[in-house]
Amino acid sequence: MTWDPRSLPDLAGRVYLVTGSNAGLGYFACEQLVRAGARVIMSARHPNRLSAARAAIRRRVPDAAPDATEPLILDTSNLGSVRSAAASVRGRGALDGVLLNAGIVHAPKTRQTTIDGHEVVFATNALGHFALAGELLTALAEAGADAGPTGGAGPTGGAGRTGRMVWVGSMSASLTPYDPVDPQLADGYSAWRAYVQSKIATAALGFEADRRLREYAVPVASVVAHPGYSTGGRTPGIAGVNEPSRVKRFTDNLQAVLAQSKEHGAWPLVRALTDPAVEGGEFWGPRTGSRGAPRRQTAAKITRDPAVAARLWDVAETATGVRWPFEAAAQLAVGRSTT
Image (cartoon, rainbow, N blue to C red):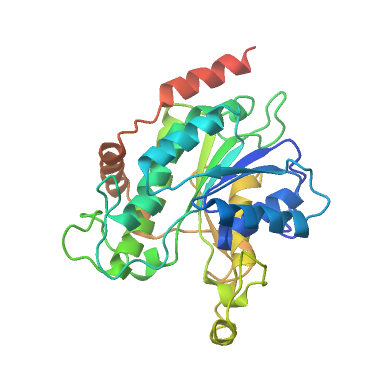
């Protein structure tokens, strides 16, 4: 099927959760989903910023339903916040998909730790999303119960009605493919390494999740996507969401050959989340790598290494205390599909 990121398939009746919804890629992913008729649970750390983002969507998508967005306070660097938010989402029922987008791009110059004692970039970008995806697995499996583990058509769910989780990777994993043998960077911390390792871990966990979901026949697809080189200075100005300075506009536009807007950067993420043809274990990004329409791509070798992924999975389980309920999710799906 031909995919038009400006005209998505009808998503009426679908429910998605997007982390980091108040700005950047997360905001534009939410706007695109709402335009297609979906109901979106928008999450962010700050209530005022979240309110501003929801107001922007109401202004820019005036024909959206009154309940097209719902607010959810969620800080992925805080495991208590993750558990609380996940419990709230599970209480809403089935969830069609979660976009694991929130994160720190500009890492601190010196190593900092979270309230849980973890290095803040790794915690925010990788550990929090690992915990959230695990806590939401049964809700995602409910949505996918009619479709089967590979995303086919079910008796009532329609083509592609499979629960889906999308992990946001980065071009940096190919530029400097560090092996995260010390993912918490207790030694040798640098801002760049902290960011890159967190994104390598995020992608590796996403691919490992797909392997394990298939092993247990859970009807949930795990996909990894990246936004290319997306900058705020090439992004439409939106009050309360994106308000770049003139200097930012000027410097970012000098990179027009390589860069694109955050709005376009959200395209691969949204396609990975909603396209019925996308399958678990795939990697999606802009056509040229840094910009362009979304295409299926090949992820950095280190992110596809099962040994690296298994090691990181063990680290994440230990750090978060979350064990994904694969068997319960599989049994839930089977029970729902036979009723």
